[in-house]
Amino acid sequence: MYKRILVATDGSTLSKKAVTSAIALASRHDADLVALTVVPRYPKSYFDGAMSFSPEDIARVEKQWADKAQDMLDAVATRAVASGVQLKTAIANSDLVAESIVAAAKKHKCDLIVMASHGRKGIKRLLLGSETQHVLTHSTLPVLVLR
Image (cartoon, rainbow, N blue to C red; front, side, top):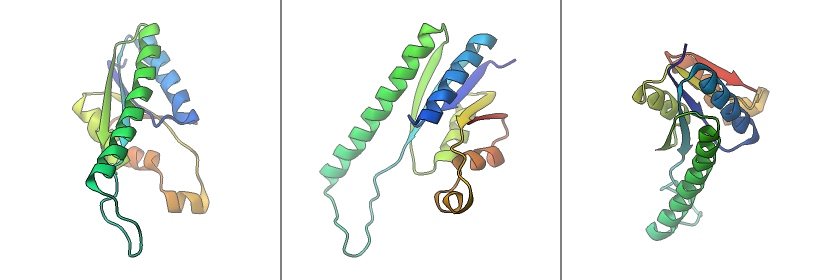
């Protein structure tokens, strides 16, 4: 049914469950898996009165974030390989998480996106937004949302 599945992960407990489900689904359908994490860019502008950081400090922080993302994807790769699933990992550097997920799914020619939803409601959803909702409304691919 599925040939290539994209799973989006941020390392949270819920996204780890999505990874587990995506690996099982890929194994069941003999599909390839693409594991994606989106790493934000360090803010370059600052508000009045806030501290500004040197380009070297910003580069150091961004490298720490990228290293952490790679470690997270390496852990996913270990689990996928143990389950006999072919896996490709990808890191997107962007502040636009949902757009990055949809673009990666298109780029890697996936036929399903698997991701978790934190289930925020009310004011928290309004303030924090819903990346899952954004993916659901902007993707032309099926999206499996796990909670």
